[in-house]
Length: 264
Image 1 (cartoon, rainbow, N blue to C red):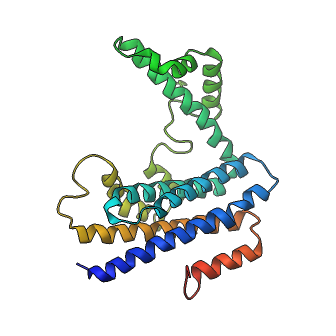
Image 2 (image 1 turned 180 degrees about the vertical axis):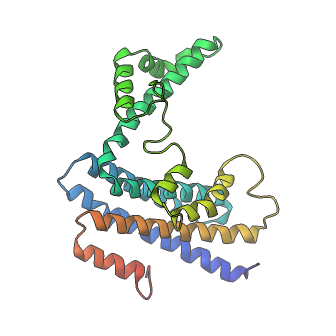
Image 3 (image 1 turned 120 degrees about the vertical axis):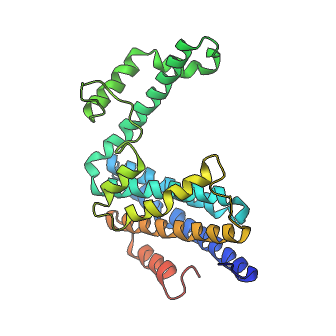
């Protein structure tokens, strides 16, 4: 359905303003809670890192005010959704927070090992541009640390060989969404509804554009902002539940973003 252009323009302005307002509140009022909290456990650090990534994606989206940049908006929204799943998993399984950091070590080595393997099989590759990666891949101590982490966190095959994990707690987004939403009533429905669609805006091909009018893209752009706001408010509610956010900050947050005239 085509929407009047003047009305759509007003919606665009309001949505971008709301995204910016929420992004600033998350950064300036919620984020300092982590810095003030003396605890530096793996759970605290992993949760802080994940929430900060959500804030960064939201701040990126806040700079995207023209529907011509719908691809950037889709990228931001997809990434916020993935980080929200990580946040939910962390707060439901705090004992697994150490895997969050172990994966970083394993993943960095695996990328270097892949480059080494390709260099060994293809003599035309210029090794000089991969000095850092090749040094890591050839370092026996780095490999020992990587393998020990794989065995510790069960990143292994049935025959005992290590694998190259693609994510710290689930191999793909569908598996992770199922793990979070066992009955499929919320997050998995969201995944089915929008994930492939958002990915089409990121991956090559014409699926995201063919047969879609400029007006329809503008409406989608508004929807991307609204959905990102929904995800970020959900993430913030999770932080409020699990961390000592001051009551005055909570009151201001609820009044500002859930009141009769939110975002004013």
